[in-house]
Amino acid sequence: MTLSSRAKRMATVTFALATISATPVSAQMPMQRLSESQMQSMMASWPASARMAAADMMKKYGPPQEVTATMVKWHNNGPWKYTIISSNETQHRFPMPHPDVMEQGINYRVPVGMFDDLAAYDGSVTADRTQGHLAARCDKEGANFLAVNLAHDIVVKRKTVATARAYYGRAIAAFKKKGRMDPYMQRLQFTPPRGQTADADVALRM
Image (cartoon, rainbow, N blue to C red; front, side, top):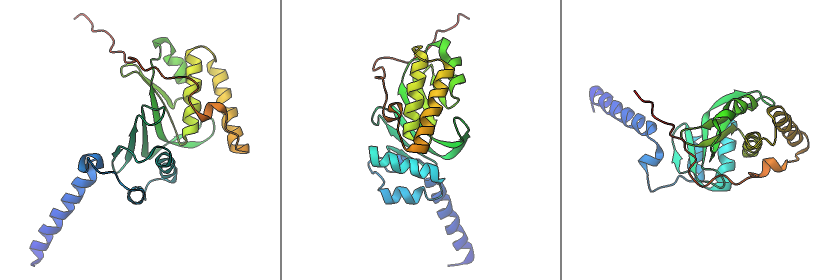
């Protein structure tokens, strides 16, 4: 094989590998799930926090339904509408420094007047009015349970922003120092709505 033909072949292989890497595994192999060893190999370069979160979720919920080079996603796993784990860490200082790598969401309609309160409570708790989702991002499922439970308490006016933040800090401190898991960290303390939570808004008259 000449040098020129070798170069052309290498270029073709490189392009093919790049194309495969950029395509979600779920699209490449729609009927095939990756094994745990394959997942570990794929995530070898991911931050430890993301690898640990993925391992915990796979142990609890089985393999994800969607896989890319930078993200894994479960649909309707346990109480969650979705769980997404990203290889990209987002640093978060509340209630103590940690990386956000795992987003978990539920169907939930947040009243328009409560969006500011939820933003003041925790910047890693997000509400999507149009799709009707409420989600939390952290590195542990227990912390996401805690965040969503407290967000619900704020919405139903069981807690204020200040008391919710204080509760969150106490629960995380107790878990870190004593290994004691608050009930709010163990599961959702309410049943997410099963009906229509999306809000398509209204069209303006032009």
